[in-house]
Length: 185
Length: 180
Length: 214
Image (tube, rainbow over all chains, first blue to last red; front, side):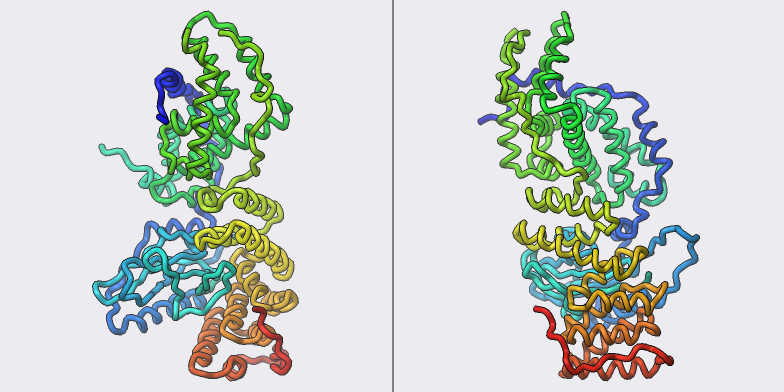
């Protein structure tokens, strides 16, 4: 079965002609846009944008790796709790900046590690971890606004692993989760 | 000057340049307009749908992934067109297609090419909405089945069948016209 | 061009009914008809003023984990029901983060009245971490009512960092071999010693502990 046959070609050619919609369509859209708040003001949307435009490269964490990773995690969470928020006008929605939270997994046998969770739509491709050469310490740091985020690691796209350094969290789909909680309001 | 990618424009809008969104609107309105016109059958509805789509896209722009503005905004348009069709069917009564077909048929046209256009418009309207949708995305917008799955939420196997049936039906409906 | 008679079958609308607002992120990840059902739940939640993101996250989690579509719908429904209960306990001004953490606490076995009490003991202060710690303690093996009691005992005086430190200490003690109840008792005593004020909540006895729900 061929997808494209001669008798429909002239039809398709006509259908491909431009629609000839009104010339001021862009202007009409933009005048509406001018009245809207800038996009991404919602907490989670803003966090996703941060994730894409802001990366942190940490120095290799050989040997002390795990302890250092935990220290950053603990510090991040500690700072999240202690941080005093800026004054905001009454009624304005407070947009959290996001605390840098590092995820670490020791997996010397892995070719690829990703973290999936509530902060990235549980997407397998959104947040890959990087490793320093040879020592099997995989890591990534992402900014997270206040909240409780369940997550898990996926090794080589198929093997689910928990974070041994994090508390366990509820799961109802047959694959256990870990959880990280970020403080603030 | 090298043209900026969708992803680059998107980042600019999200980092505090809302007016840059106009460039994405310019870039995509022709394609969206063409699909909306063929899907909905008239310019007024198509313009409403396209404008509405760009506004909705702007509101949830933070959810758009990287360089994928095109398929993402197309997905929003496909949904708007579906909702529009359902709304119209509800308000105008069940047999909306025959009304539209009769209205189209009553427009007399002596010029050969216009008659062909009228016939094509009429034939498209005879298709069930999901077949029309699949046919337009595949043959007019030249999307791969994988891209169509993302945009419509329908599995490629089902989409192939709808395209096949749509082509079959259009060929039958337009057999006389094409032969003339 | 001749139109002739329009066959009846062409006139019968074959358009499947579509949910009104379709969430783009479900497309291609949750199969129909589950996707339409989840969309309906999201729409109804929106109308009710419940946060949609946690419900969407739950559906996407199920999708990534390869769960059957019926399980995804059931999970989203269950979370929606929990969010309703938490929003009553925490009040209209609760943030999405607070409601999500509260739902986890409920899932772990806390009662709605525990959550309402938490709100009363921490007026104007965020409840996210307190509720999250409640859930985390249960996950570490602490009985639900004990965990709730511990969090409430700290509610008036602990800030978020204190709660997180508390949870981490209890967890470490359990890993080092202490029973959950003992680990909690030790840590709550030291926490409340440092911060106790007259009239603060005291922890209920650990005698008849409710078994953690499977």
